[in-house]
Image (cartoon, rainbow, N blue to C red):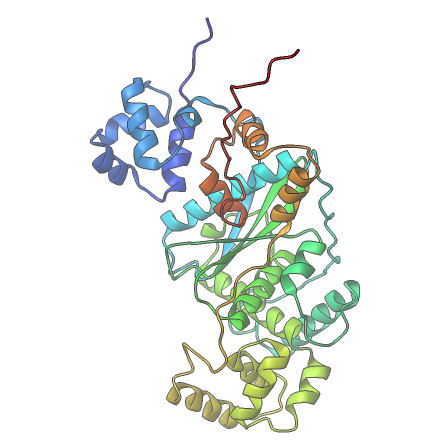
Length: 394
């Protein structure tokens, strides 16, 4: 007789996935925090009634708690924007979700030839000092790196039309999450999948405008190319973290708004806000980011920069600029991969979900759709009744 074994790590993972503390789950489930701790550490085994409570309160399938992962994606570091202001609980939840994305990626990798990682080799010196990271030398280094990236990916010096596609084409996985916390804009994570380093970029979904989302993606690409991925970010100083954030911002600015081409565009009317509004439609970058870049390039003085930013505040553009439209991610490579498997009759939807479950990814289809940023009902199983009447053979 085969007995099911309860795995405490799965309870811990599900709890953190939903962004709950032990105290919060104890209150919801009416099971003591001490008992929950014993279950999570495999020092005690809950009976089936308590497991049903966990499944209900955490919205996870019952079988989830009795499975081991066949695929183990190892995460080293996650770069969160606004690390200091976002809660650790929420950051942990998002990081765990990306680990599930990595597991599903590894499962699909057996059937789909995803784009291979294609990143330029960057030699970044950088400045950890918060005051030196925006020096002329630091800016020049980032200008050269941004130019190197554009040349390596052969994208010229004009506006980048589809940054998400560009990232995915070069092996970076892009997805989106509802973070339930405004203090997380985006985050990037390196995960070891099948012995290889895979980079993921997760974008906070909602009503954020196109310019901000594009900047977020470029910011995370900056972390991927410039910064260490083998250390605990909680251990570095706040100033070191702020320096890295500024470096990623400056990289995003130099990548999206190249010195020569954008500089030539803006030089005609560098102090005219209506002209910035006109250029926003071309470069798909926020007015504030363009003003910052114009100042960085030395096209406007400190006084002119401060005057323009005061005008932006006066007009109420800090939070909402003219021509802002909510941005939604394109259908990503996961949607393409699953569509391909189903269209080519490799799997039915049910067979695909069964495959995920067999390999330890036992989640409801709605959660998988959200994790992979799929179209609603992509993984909906249509139950069809088999005809019970047939004609007799004569």
